[in-house]
Length: 307
Image: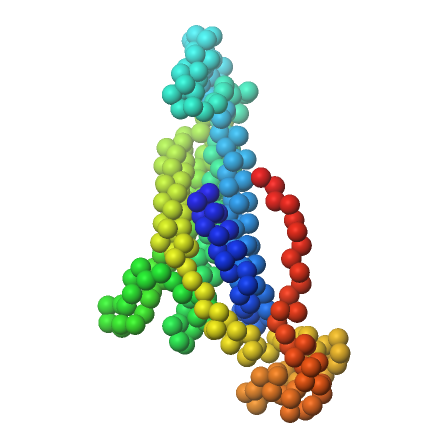
């Protein structure tokens, strides 16, 4: 995840100067920077790392020494302490004896919590992967704002394609992790009275999710994000064609008039600029300023990032 975060931060800086169409509800919206979009992805990954680290704290409590039902019957008083010290020595971690053995043996809430954090990471990665493969759709009849590394150029019968196989693999992994979380949640419900009998299911699915996400994050980083390129000309072309540019007129013309202009441009298959030039509602200088995508993007606030 940290490797992926670093790669996304690099793309955020590299793509900062490239303007593109923003999208909401799958419809054209105001222009944004491609770097801002990737900054959002980086922040998702950063928060995912933080969620995992927070959930780790709950996993450090071990129910060793409680024996059958949590009472510690027939257990040497020093068993838990000595055993956990050996585990810490070998793993380099900071495991500790559970505060309450009845909670730790009857419930597996800490593992459910960790699975929830992994599911959230999966949701984030699926959003990022889907956005990237949509922006790279084409090469001529899609959005085409991004160019994917040619991991799998062509297809079995159609040459000239670059299939988004790496983002697609991310999506599939995330779907599996979300499914694993459902199984783990049901496993957490298996804590009847003094013992959870579904621990094998929980362990199997949790370790599976960890392996899948670890592998796919590394693969996504090295075989997609690091080699990702933008198409500035395509981004500029899409902005000029966007009807969302009319939003900049609303303070000057009023909402209804701006909507009329957008409707006319849509029906006549013209750009907002072409309609305004025909109707001569603004001077050439004003028109250039109003439809300047750069001026529509609010300056980025300087926010000190928490480490």
